[in-house]
Amino acid sequence: MKANTEITQKQTENVIGKENKIVTGVIWQQLLLFFFPILFGTFFQQLYNAADAVIVGRFVGKEALSAVGGGTGTLIQLLVGFFVGLSSGATVIISQYYGAKRAEMVGYAVHTSIAFSLVAGVGMMIVGVTAAPWALRAMSTPEDILGPSTTYIRIYFLGVIGNLIYNMGAGILRAVGDSKRPLYFLIVSCLTNIVLDIAFVIGLHRGVAGAALATILSQALSAVLVLWVLMRTKDMHRLELRKIRFDGRMFHRIIRIGLPAGLQSVMYTSSNILIQSSVNALGTDTVAAWTAYSKIDSLFWMIVNAFGISITTFVGQNFGAGKYHRMRKSVSVCMIMSMVSSAVLIILMYSFAPWIYRLFTTDSAVIAHGVHMSRFLLPSYFIYVIIGILSGALRGTGKVLVPMLLTCGGVCSLRILWLFTAGQMYPGINTIMLSYPVSWSITAVLFIVYYFMKFPGKKKEN
Image 1 (cartoon, helix red, strand yellow):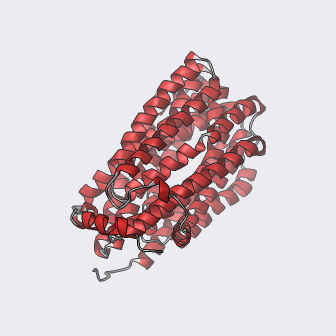
Image 2 (cartoon, helix red, strand yellow):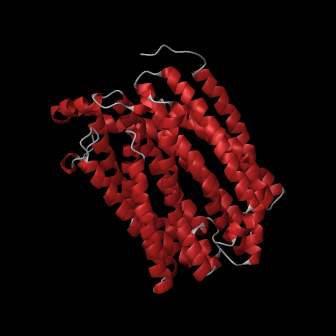
Image 3 (tube, one colour):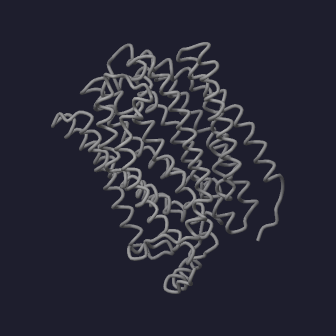
């Protein structure tokens, strides 16, 4: 790579003169300052699909509710989740170079990452539009929701580029310690999505097609906003359109770290596809309840994922700055905060489950199925906190291969094995759901052992 003196000298001087609180401030305070914008941002991101589900479920029917969730949500997660996993490599690389104050390398990583988003978006659009009907049939999607499900997923993937650009851009901002502006952009785009949902679904009676169109237009808005901020910043992560291109060595570094996370996401989603196929066989009421449950249960994942993203950036910057004791201490602090937060949410979700499901549907059978699902699984959610925080911390140090193998083996493979053994012997929703706590428990133990093997004691700091 050639030295880019145009950005290196001036931007490095700017960063040196600016205190980086992530590597110097009070750990719990800095974690919370970073966590809350990510949490609220994740909340508004989840609200995209939740708004679609609530509006079509209440004003179109349970078939439409199943169409905007269920199999379509799982397939979208399969492709988009793989990209987000890959893009996490850029977040780690940028956070480490930013912590080390290497402006030139940050610049290469930023422009390569945006180029990757554009190319991946085009490829994903083609695959998503052409393969949707086949994939939905392969998941045993009920015939009464196959048509609207195909319509929703095809429209979604026509506009998927906006989603990918936003996720990559938001990851870049978070890598340098800015978790507030991605939140602001999501609030704006989420409110836009709700307004467009009301206009297209209720006002124009466009059904699931209207919900999908509202989603992609809102995501396009968030992509424009994040690009605008990256282009206007004076810091070392400034984006210049004329410099968007692939840098071979930087792309290799990003993929080397991001690929295991991407494969992990694919394995997760693949196991969830099998679970969704098993749920689909239980009828439309159960599919609708599972769809609503996945939206409600996303509140928990928002908290754990927000803490996971926070600790990845926190560990990445402190690792880059050579502050290893601070890095280990931040993991312990983050684990405690995540456990306490999860406990509060689990108690609320367990207690108010019947009323929460009424937001999605008035069908009594669907509500009954959904309440049972929530109360069956909620007590085991504490186990996943361990996996989420430790995997995020290890990712921040660049250790991604073994955590990926642990997750794929302990969660995904075991879950698939469970479905083909216990699921066949004792068919039913309870057996399907039991695959979650069983696989989480084994994987959590493996992560604890590996983490303390890699970080057993003190390491000299710079």
